[in-house]
Image 1 (cartoon, rainbow, N blue to C red):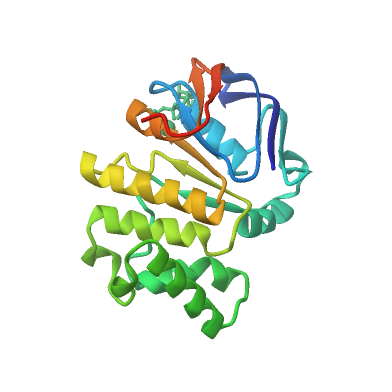
Image 2: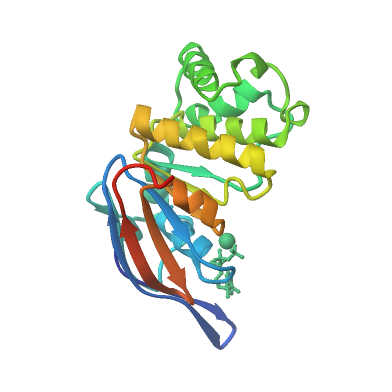
Length: 230
Ligand SMILES: Nc1ncnc2c1ncn2[C@@H]1O[C@H](COP(=O)(O)OP(=O)(O)OP(=O)(O)O)[C@@H](O)[C@H]1O
Ligand SMILES: [Mg+2]
């Protein structure tokens, strides 16, 4: 499904180079749910953005469904991302002047899917994430937790191979955070969605079956366990 191979990354500012990731290597199988843990500045978002094809690595490879994405042209990569990769942002990134349903439909608009099918798929997912009755409202009329549910539905609407989430509960209170994590776990268990979730909350990481930990750009731990950690 996903293989990260000898991945290193440096940011360049003029003549200065900042190394951020060092020889990262791991695999994620279909249906896994992985927490990517580490303190602020450890390189979590950088790693996630590289895996999601939002930028190119300095060295190494990211293979998704047997395709090394760093070798793709900009156009190929854009198309691959549209069809294979879902992304959930901490700040939801919903379009304010589109309704909840239209926001969820948007990735399908880019794929040229017909309106009737778009609407069906969006409503079905909005029901699955528990906000079917909010479909004709605008994002500003929803709570933070509800907006994150919309963004989760949007990330799933193209039936991607893998979904990356960068601190999806970072803007939410503890109770809502637990609800969103419950939802992600439920989607993983019932729809076999593969998730890689960045967090610096140990509580979130405890709920997944696998934790990959970064420290100063190095992978320092990759631990799996069966069953629920609770
Ligand atoms: N565009 C950039 N240019 C230069 N340095 C960068 C850039 N983006 C990130 N960095 C640096 O890379 C390091 C890792 O940043 P990253 O955003 O991946 O950390 P993070 O683990 O996601 O942290 P946080 O928990 O605070 O979100 C930091 O030292 C940061 O300053
Ligand atoms: Mg980050």
